Image 1 (cartoon, one colour):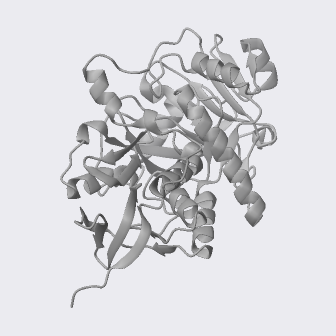
Image 2 (tube, helix red, strand yellow; image 1 turned 180 degrees about the vertical axis):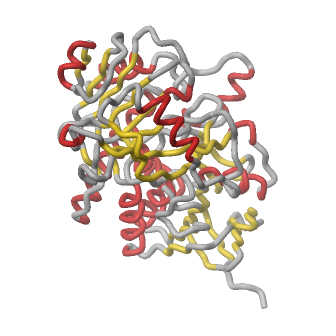
Image 3 (tube, helix red, strand yellow; image 1 turned 60 degrees about the horizontal axis):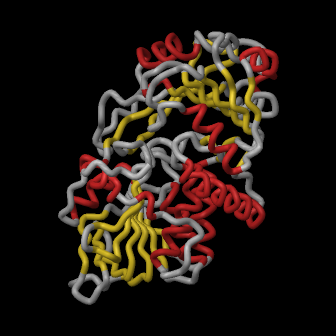
Amino acid sequence: MARMPKVADVLVIGLGAVGSAALYQSAKLGARAIGIDRFHPPHDQGSSHGDTRITREAIGEGREFVPLVMRSNQIWQELEAATGRSLLVRNGGLVLASPAMPGDHHGSTSFIQDTIAAATQFGIAHEVLSTDELRHRYPQFRLRGDEIGYLEPGAGFLRPEACIETQLSLARKLGAQVRTAETVVDCRPMQDGTVEVITGANTYSAAKVIVTAGPWIQKIQELLGESRAAYFKVYRQVMYWYALARHAEQYMPERFPVFIWIAGNRPRDMMYGFPAIDGPHGGIKIAAEQYDATVDPDAVPRAVSDGEISAMYREYVAPHFPDVSSECLRTTTCLYTVTPDAKFIVDQFRSYENIVFASACSGHGFKHSAALGEALAAQALGHPSRIDLSGFSARRFSRSDRGDRTQ
């Protein structure tokens, strides 16, 4: 017997950071909304987990991101007020780098200078600290001696699992359906202008489809007969929690900011970390970035080896954090889906005006996700958007090929 399709105005495929936001915002606008995920979000298989994600308003990756993060922070606060949950903690954010350090970090060849310029342009409260000022205020860091610091008091961290869970819960209360443990096996536009989406368990018919599948975006594209593999590379990343050997009180959120430290000129040398949000015995989370080998999102090595743990400590932790022990309390892996310019892609699938995708957040997407979901929902339902997403179109790559890339 043929399945009777479940009908939606908006169907969201993938319920991570952006997808949970798009589903909630669609339901908030009154749409019949359905969200599908192959796992049970919030989960630890994609790019939206690990207890904390940095949020900062001066974006060194590009000034076009600043309106997104500013609106996202407003949404997180609205969600906190509506639910009483803690989603956003503004304990300050610090970017450390040598002004003379060359390299390419998240698409920027001068990350700290670009961050300072964005803060100046948008009137974001900040300080620029000399090496001596950094040593005085933050003895937790062992500096090389030529670093300066960008300090943003309004920066801090988000709780990713709570953010996703909160938006999905509110979406359900507004009438949205959340379908988990369902993998999309077919997706095809129909002659009547709708889109049919088939999973292993159900068939869906939707007027608009928003694909926010993260590292699985290529698999959805293949179902539609598209191939933009050159635009997306998926990398396995590891997050580490190391124990504190001494002075644990200096690493509590009220005394230790979130940080990004450009520790070298390789892309992988963009080290970042967080305070001890679970108290002195929970350690601090520190990570670098890996761009050496791509992975299939369905075959990611999830186990973190002793060799990886000791190499991370030897190369990044021990030289920079005198109070942090070599004892690793826990680890987890996540995935970056990265574009050639380390920016986002938000676009329609070719020839399919009613299927839009947002993906490849390139390792810095969570802070922007609430506003991105809101803009996608507004676009799908024909409402005016607060944010112009046209600059994130994949068309910029074809313009670049012709030599007239827009900056």
